[in-house]
Image (cartoon, rainbow, N blue to C red; front, top):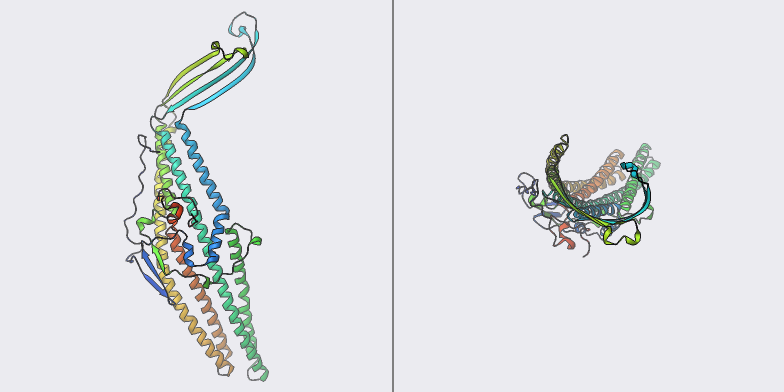
Amino acid sequence: MSAGCAVGPDFVRPQAPGEEGYVPGSEPAETVTAEGTAQRLVAERQIRADWWRLLSSPALDAIVDEAFARNPGVGAAQARLRASEDARKAGLGVFFPQIDAQASASRQQSNPRRIGLSLPSSTYNLFTVSGSVSYSLDLWGGERRALEGLTAQVEAQRCTVLGTYLILSSNVVNAAIAQAGYRDQLRDLTELLQVEREQLSVTEAQAEAGTIPYVNVVSLRAQMASTEASLPPLRQRIDETDHLLAVLAGRTPASWQPRAFTLADFTLPAELPLSLPSALVRQRPDILVAEAQLHAANAQIGVTTAAMLPNITLGVSGGLANPELSQLFSSASTFWGLTAGLTQPLFHGGTLYYQHRQSIDQRDEAAETYRQTVLTAFQQVADILRALAHDAEEVEAQSRAVAAADEALKLVDTNYQTGIATYVQLLVANTQVQQARLAFIQAKAQRLQDTVALLVALGGGWWNAPESASASTSRPAATPPGAPP
């Protein structure tokens, strides 16, 4: 509803920032390549509403869909949205006449002596049917400002729902990627453990033949035990991510069917969208929430201003009253009244004034909160853009490190079996392979997670969902992003 002709400042949407980039000297598009896989940043490319499908994992898609349907956090957010919409509808009632009806039946005894008359008392019945209509003239628009604030709260909650979907999908995807990384680490360590068993077998044979001291066998057994000890923590992390995915999907861990993700199940998107800063502030749910809360706080100034000004109320009442029920609807039983009231606050001990000052201060606080939210969003995008470039560098370096460590282990193992290399050299080579492989897997998982982080930091693409294709960014739909039409 329009808030024109109402006291208090009209809300003006904060201006979008004028920067064209997120980091100093950055180009709007950039290509980063690692291990033969390139990622290109494409300026102003639209983000898919179902952005997680860019990873090309049907099993992941199924979990996200299930989480949208069953997660309690989504249900709670939707309930809060419905409650805010109901509060707004309730606020609309003030613009209509307030109509009430009453009916009563009583038996009374009068005592004329109470008013100085020497008459005998009497007992009688009294039947009454009455009604009243009242209407408050919103001269200064205080009620319209209140409704404006309620409407802004609906918008804030609508964007909160969108943020809930975005965070939920992000948590599901990141948990799946983390589990994939743990499984890949477990696989590589298991393969390395098999290599160490073979090395131990050779060493034991050499010790029995007397060609090497028995201490070599003990050292390799210690190395193998250390590798075996690193497996249970990885299995525990895999179990924890399974349990997390179950809860995110709205299920108990006991009723959940685990998915065995590996990093090979995910495809790194070749092109990543990069929204302009001016578009980011109209896309991210947390920024839109802060904007709606600023709108609500701004409207409250009008409410407190109107409270200090005169208020006019009109009313009409009437009905029927008669001591005889059979005569209740006769013309002699009618009564009516018209009222017009004017209320002008004169002295409230400063309460109304300071309530008005409080609303201004709260508006100022909301404005600073909005500004901080925007700055934090820009920082997140800038951090992720830099991280993607650094991730590519790390993946490439770790790939070379794995290749070098594997080659070194093969050479040392061959030399060890022929008696050229020492067991110490073999232990060092095994350790280097283990560390290189784990670091490589962690780097690949981090690159995937930072790719996801960029899509989430840009807002997730909810405005491109079929349901909200015609909706403006000021009134986003509160349906699951990427849901079927």
